Amino acid sequence: MKTVVVGLSGGVDSSVSAYLLKEAGYNVIGLFMKNWHDDSVTISDECPWLDDSNDAMLVAEKLGIPFQTVDLSEQYKERIVDYMFWEYEMGRTPNPDVLCNREIKFDVFMKIALDLGADYVATGHYCQRGETEIDGKPVYQLLAGADANKDQSYFLCQLSQEQLAKTLFPIGHLQKSEVRKIAKAQDLVTAEKKDSQGLCFIGKVRLPDFLQQKLKPKEGVIVEIPAERAQEKINDFQEANDSDVAVTDVAVLAKKPKYSVADGKVVGKHQGAHYFTKGQRKGLAVGGTPEPLFVIDTDVEENVIYTGQGKNHPGLLRSALFVQEDEVHYIREDLKLQEGEVVETKARIRYRQPLEKAWLHKVEDGLFVSFENPQSAISEGQFVAWYDGDECLGSGVIS
Image (cartoon, one colour):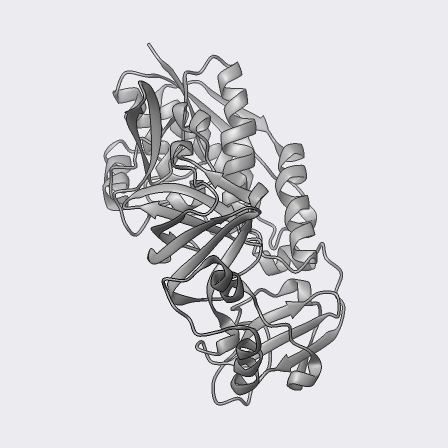
């Protein structure tokens, strides 16, 4: 009998995953990850991780499976929290969910599970694992979940072949409604529990509050850049956009304009450029404009936020991005690109974004990704993931 360690989070998805694996004949062990207990960044008197741990324990008791709690707070702080603060301080926008999966669930947690004698690790992600054979060897595929509204393949875009080989996604073929129906039928305490909102495995901590309690406020100005001025600066270094572009043209398309206060007018003040991200609309506290103001860029060195009116402001839009060589990751290593190759693909730069027609351009020092349609708020530190149909082939951190 194969042994599977399930990451029981205290939610309905992992609960049903454990149930389905037990029904399938696996020896199932429930393991709850305690990733955070810093009271200085909570926003209420609640203790969400303790509630989740209790729910996970009740599910394990109901299913009659062994249950343990493992404290990964130290690793989480080092690999996720400290990294996030550093990235925001540098004016970048990290994705904690992708990082949590890469650094914690499928690294630290997986090693603990395998040390316990597990053959596999299972999670409640809405993804599916495929398998094919190339040159007589198994090659694992990361496939989208059957529920298009819940597909979480983007969050797992940094997984490796070694990790996929040891991973099971028991609910990936189900709709969310079916998962809740199973939980209710089995009288699991998590059947009606709402999905978690907040940072990965921290709980009810909103990101702005989280950042403001760790990064010191610093007053600066908010500058509005007129659309015409932004377009002028873009035209200074961009030539006509052609989808079938050469690498040199893609490099131009991936560039972003550098603004100065003189390019616009001061319309307000803020308490720290590192609290804001590209595309952000809320929190600026500036009114009186015909269209809403969006953050089009931040300068953390000068502590200036640059904004523009409307979601179609040219400062928000770019047709290409760049990933440095050491940040390019292939799930399908057999499909690794060679220098000079240009491959058509589908790509996304954020969770739940519809896949967009794009091209991968491999160059010596990394990878350009160009899009058929301009993308809004391409942010350094976020992940771009590319697909062939339902299969996620690789990803990279946007430079």
